[in-house]
Amino acid sequence: MPDAASWQSKQQRRMMTKFDVKRMANDIITRTGFKGNTAIVLGSGLGDFAENFDNPTVVPYASVNGYPKPTVEGHAGEFVFGDLNGIPVMVAKGRFHYYEGYPLSVVTLPIHLFSELGIKYLIITNAAGSMKKEFPPGDLMLITRHMDCTFREKMADPKWIDRPPYYQPEVLQAVRNASEKSGVKIVEGGYCWTQGPAYETPDEIHYYLSIKGTAVGMSTVPEIETAGDTGIHVVGISCLTNYAAGITDQPLTHHEVMETADRVKSDFAELIKEIITQFGAWK
Ligand code: HPA
Image (cartoon, rainbow, N blue to C red; front, top):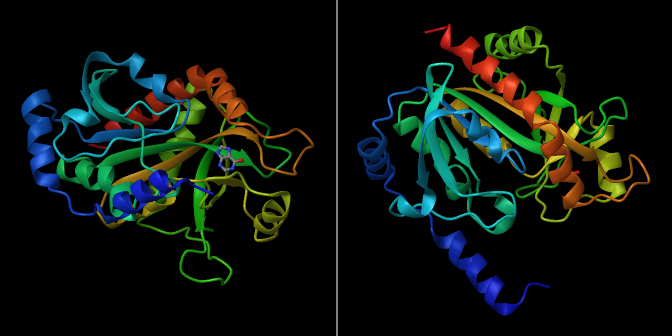
């Protein structure tokens, strides 16, 4: 059971729903002079990616008027602007999860801000549990479809979303090309968004498997849907950090999630760099 104070702050966060995104974007552009059209959201344990940037400028979320502050270990809470292979890029290190008590308006705020900043290409990354024995921890998975498994609104079986504007054949192909070019292997599959904050039970995983899920995680789906709806070319990549509950007899820990993400971070960085180069070639 949450204690009274944390329950109250959860309720306050749920109420905080109105944002002046234009003002935030103007503030950021004034401070950074950013003129790029590519953004990346970095998931749990993948935050080091911005170390690859030339000429980085850090903008802490707390310094952007009205922007919320994330609370999960492994999430720094800052934007970094810089150049990757000469291409201007911004990253968001740290995100807002539904399970932290934020309303979807907060979870998707970064995407609305990206849109206001002129972002046209977005790579969303996350850590996820693998439900497929053949995809061991350390594999990087291109998300080719997703399903909302939070059961927030109804108890019916969730449906797969696998079409444009969320999944565009040319965007998926750009990632496959990037994999081939960089030599970083990817696998492909469907991502099930669960509400969290607890990891799933083996019975829940059994059910997600029965409806053909490949990976399971607690983020990304609201962001992919918002990005597609605002006309951004979006791609989701999961770092499979562990086998989902019940797939092996190993207990599942946040430590394993962070450790695996750390182990694959250089491969992951190479893949992302090449995806950005592929997107850059479309302009
Ligand atoms: N389940 C849900 N979220 C996750 C997992 C998992 O097994 N691993 C990393 N994020």
